[in-house]
Image (cartoon, rainbow, N blue to C red; front, side):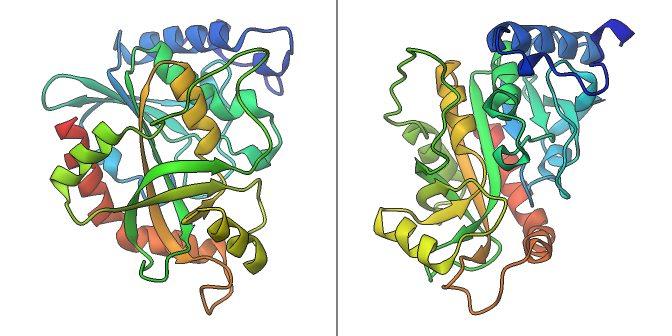
Length: 282
């Protein structure tokens, strides 16, 4: 990649309030096409904690690019994320864009950077966006290492990726069609409503009970803002949470990021295989 497409250190065009995020996403998509040699990607996946090995099971890796070399992307600041963009050729000839560089809302870079990967995925041609995460479970019947489908979300960030008078219908945001396909692969998959908190601190037991009272089943710090941007960009969304722990006040043990990573490592072979089989069926 030429030096003209590499972000200057400390600069990000998305931080300019006069810039158009859609145009920056188009620029990033063109750079991905140039760097990978793949003109169009058909499906995109953001792989959260515990889901990383799926990229090795989906198909043949065509190219892998450090995300920070692509316009608008931010180097991953969280252990458990690869920090790369990977182009994978599926068995049926389609191409998947694997996003291993998630920018979290709590990093303080602004919503534009949080959803830039999703907007870029749409600009590469992707029509389906799969969003995965590691999260806390509110249902006591769930156990660490269990994957669940996201049926809806409650956005508790008090923020939105939409700017100005932009009105987007979020009915069936997490596509029932795609969830039904996922259940043809694993009929035992449960589902629930995801609550995105601002983070980076874990939720208090009282906040978990609030989430439960308003209809939440899963608590975490990502995904909701990305899903809204994906819908705005015209993509169909499938969401998966890996229950890495029971949420505060439900789990008898204190919460820690080490626990999240360990649950992800233990579950990774099973959930990665599940995700690869779901992608093949879409």
